[in-house]
Each structure stands twice: as structure tokens, then as C-alpha cells.
Length: 640
Image 1 (spheres, rainbow, N blue to C red):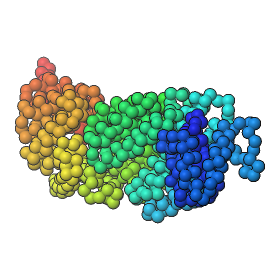
Image 2: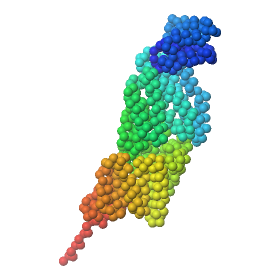
Image 3: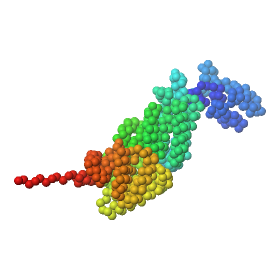
Image 4: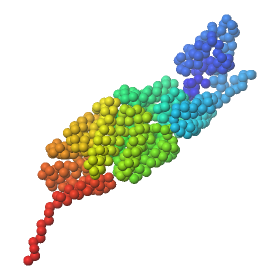
């Protein structure tokens, strides 16, 4: 059957040509060399690339065979009539006396078995196991089971569409086009795995989640959400999907500007042809790229739009994945764990229904991360350990997901006072990043920066001055290396570099190198202002740290300005961070002689500090500060 007929199109002279050339090829077994070019043209994928008419095809065959087969033109003309009769399936057409009739509705099964068969399954298994991946056999078995089910449902639905003559032709054509899109995606997926390097094989199960499910092509799907059966539009969509994969590769290589330009052009194509699933995929990818560039507001807007489009198109897998990304972005980037946990609650039923273990693990990790930032270290540890258990059962050795979970577990158990365990988790995360990405890769550098923060927090908690100094120097060495590698990879204007400078600032403050600390804070703040805007709540932490350093240097005016701005920026953010700002500003105001305002601010800060188990030391300091400012009671005069 010609490709355009498989897509639901009407029979034409061009499809008759295809049928004739396919019959010749199958009957002859091996096409003679003198006919090969002619038959190949008749089997062209696009109708426009075939002969202009059936007569032109027959003439070309006759010319190529006339010296050896004078009657070929007459025989081929007769064959053309037979082929046309087969295509139209006329009930009164006589059956050929020798050739058995073939049920055209058996073709979907034959095509899928040609693509996904025991030999192909064995190659997939070998590709994964030979890639040197731990638990490769488990991965290949799980992946084969998923693809077996996908192939079974594809054959069932495609065959049913062939047999059901009563279905509306326009809807049937779109459903066929949807199934053909899934077939082409599976073909490309299998080819990708066969050529993949080890780094790509690690993501092979994630990649399989992006395959179009036959369920999306069901009879009850809105017609506007199914692809166009027009071959030209289908080719345009297929090209756009290839370009989307190329754009993601560009972004991974650090070429974000080109990747963003490409993905936005794909969004425009999706809207022009009216294909919602493609637009949802492009929006999701654009959101990830914007997150990489530091544009958190733009990323959040694209993710929320992608959730709506994925829901409209019935793509529950994409909707769940985007919701998980929103949990991470809002919980971490915006420091809004309550909203992040609300997104997690929306994702949980989808993930449980889909029964995709990696997606379940990713949601446990993201939810644990949000709970960590909320200050609930006990529940965060529970979620993160569940995620690590999923990774241990399902992933294939070193993996970015495992690495991130180890990193967050380090931060979590640190809040519970388990310093040695925290250091071990973050050492393992950094070592895994080095094996996966290389020593100086920005991902490795970011994990090294997080490890430096862990050591710094331990230094701040140390009672002995010598231990505080030792840990501070260790943290500074890690932070210096991290900032150098991040700046070399991402450039000095990237927010990741600014976060590294902020770690350096805090460390230098602990070491009482206040001039260098102020310089590092000012560098971080300047980059974050340019990246997020002058009014962004994301400036709060850097303004707080700068104000603390300036206060320690005795610069009360600059410290007051930085902390007052932090108070404004943090008004709608994390309440514990805001309480820290209020207390630090109160201390500055007290020294500036504004005692009443200082005491008011400190009292305002107290409830948030009392509600957060992490801030016991700060709360004790605040209570002592307030007690020192209570007016002394007048002694009662002695009784007469």
C-alpha cells in the first residue's frame, strides 16, 4: 500500500504506480538492474517524485525491456489494470487464478513485525548491555515489555481502522496519521539506541516516554488534536520534531541562543498547522532552556502553558513530567515550597496511574526537595530515600537523577545534625558527576559548590575556633574551584556563577576576610540583578549576606541600605529568610539609634524563627538581643 493510502488518503494514479512497482518487486524477487531505477522511482515516498502518469511508467519499463521482452508493454498494461482493481477492491473484479488474495488489513501487523521483531529486540538488548551499563539486563527487559505493549496496541488499533468501513473518513485519516507518527517515532528511537554512546543510553528509558502512545490516537480524541493526514503537513511536523531534538542537543552543548531561536520557530510551526502535541513538546523544551539560561519567570510561564496543552492533547506522560519540573522550579527557584507541593499533589495521581518507575522516582525527589526548602527535613529525607530506592532498582549505574538525589540527601541530613553522613552523600554526588561529565563540567562544578556550602554550614556550627578555621578553609577551596569552572564554562554573567560567588562571600565572612567577602557579594548581586531584574525576590539572599558583611565591617549606612532593600524584595518570599533579614536589620537600626523600630522588627521576626526547627541558634540570639534592650525595672522604694 502506498504511503499516502496508509495515511488515510484517497487512491490516485500515483498510488496505482506504487502498487504496480511493489507487485513487480515482490513477484520478481530481485529487480533486474535495468529496471531498478524505474521501479525505485515508482516506489518513491512522495507521490510527486514518481512518474507523472501510469503511461509514462509503462513506457519507461517498455523502453528498458523491449530488446529482450517485446510483449512487456502489453503485459504491464494488463498488470496496471489488475493493480488498480486490487487497490479499489471492486467486488465484481475476478480473482487471479494463481495468486492467492492477500487481506490488506494484515499489512499493519506485517509492518510492525518488520520493525519490532525478535532480531530487533535482541539488538536492543545487546546495545544496552554492551554499553557497559549496570543493570542493563533489567533495563532492556523493562523497555522491551513497554515496547511490546505499544506495538500490540498499535497493530490492534491500526487493523481496526482498516476493517471499520463505517468510521468517518476524515476522522479515520487523522487517526491513521497519528498512528503513523507513532510508528515513525519508534523507528527513529530504535535507530538512535543502535547508534548511541553510553551517555545517551543512560537516558534511553526517558527517551521512550516521549514516543506517541497509540492511546492518543483513539476514536474519542478531538479531531483538532490529531495530526493532519495531508502528506505535506505530516512531513513538516516530522521535520519540526527532528529540529526539536537538534535544538535540545544544541542547548546541552551550551548554544542556548540558537536553541531558543529554533524551538520558538517550531512553536510557530505547530500553531500554524494547528497541532497541539507538537506545541506542548516545544513549550516544554523552551522552558527547560530558559531555566538553563536563568530566566525563571519565562520558564515558569512556558511550563504552565505546556501543562495546559499536554492536558488538552491527552498526553498524560508529558503533563506529569512538566508538573514535576514545576515542582522543582517553583520550590527551588522561587523558594515557594507550598506551591511546589501543590503541583506535586496534581502530579501524583498521574504518576501512579502511568506506573512509570523513573517518573515516580523523579516526583519523590522533587517533592523531597520542596520539603527540604520548607524546612521539614524529616519528611524530605523520607521522600528522597524513596527516590534513591527507585533509582537503585531501576537506573543503570551513574545517573544525573541519582546524583541530584544524593546531593539533596546531603543537605537534608545536615539539617538533622548528621554532618558526617551529609558529607558522605555530597562526596558521592560530586564523584558521580566527575565520572559522568568530567572534572570541570558545569554540572560537576555546581555539585562541588553545593558540597562547599555543606562544609561551610558545618564551619558556622563549629564551637572551636581552630575547627571553624579548618572547615572554612576547606569550604573556600571547594568554592574557589567551583566558581572558576562555572565561569570558564558558562561565562561570568550566569546566575550559577553568582551563586558560587555568594558561597565564597559567606565563607570569607566566616574566615573574617571581610574585604574579599564584600567584593564577592557585590559581584554576585550585580550578576543576579542583571539576570533576574532589579525588583526580583531572588535578590533577597545576596542582599542579606552583603548587609551582614558590611555591618561586620562597621559600614552601617551601606549595611542599612542593603538590608532595607532585602526587606522589600523578600516581603513575599520565604518567611524564614525574611525573618533573618528583619533581625539583621534590627541590629543595624539599634546601632543607628533607632531602638523602637529595631525592637519592632526583631519581635516581628520571632514567630517565623520559632516555627522553623533549623533556626534554634538564631532564635536564641534574638531572644538574648531583645532581653538586653528591655528597660530595667525601677526598684521599689522601701516601705515606711
